[in-house]
View 1 (cartoon, rainbow, N blue to C red):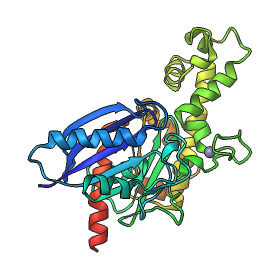
View 2 (view 1 turned 180 degrees about the vertical axis):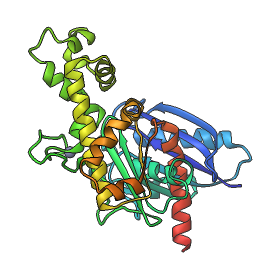
View 3 (view 1 turned 90 degrees about the horizontal axis):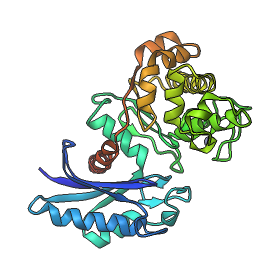
Length: 322
Ligand SMILES: [Zn+2]
């Protein structure tokens, strides 16, 4: 069995491992992405690969796969200009650089595309023909597999459901749009919505729970406070559920995939709200379409994206072999 050097580059942490073609992780390491200071992402990736290659011993390594938190021109293996978490990689031919340095074929794609490939090949989406992965974390990523093909789009933007509007006159989003799903249902969006609502309300229990400092309100705290019935947190979480429901309905009505997997860092908090989210989806979706699409909420795990980088290699090799 051949194995793959798989790397998940995150804005904060980069994970790399040796992953078999069945998705088993033989070895793994995690380090801070910018441990060497700003601009050191490439050095971090190279050092991780070097270390793992040395540790691999006799295990034959077939290729390198990398997921990057950015738009990626996957066919060329070049990171796009939209690389806000790893700006030093913008425009960089990462696949060619790694391939030349390590003498192995290298494949690069957006991290949530890699995550979608992992869910499809190894996990909750196994056997599906069509699969959509929604990954609310700090931001809001998504990936689409339609009739057995990963959708990348003409410029690499396919699947950016986090930045499609669920409310066209909603508040501005950090992407430059407004009313985006990410404003309502990403970790950053939930935290910022709660922070804005408690501003000037010194008596707010949510503010008290954050030690009186609005900027310390996190999405996790908002979900916990909502579970206790705190009114501001309840309103914010209610909007998150409705926004996600609207997006699920958009996906179900627009693509009607076999499976939608909701995962990512916020999914652990969303799992308890599944009934409300599905009820919100039902307000907008065709009933028979919604009934036919299986929707599952799976707590996020950084290892899945790393395994996705391996799934990316397997996918590309199969696709290019025709
Ligand atoms: Zn946006």
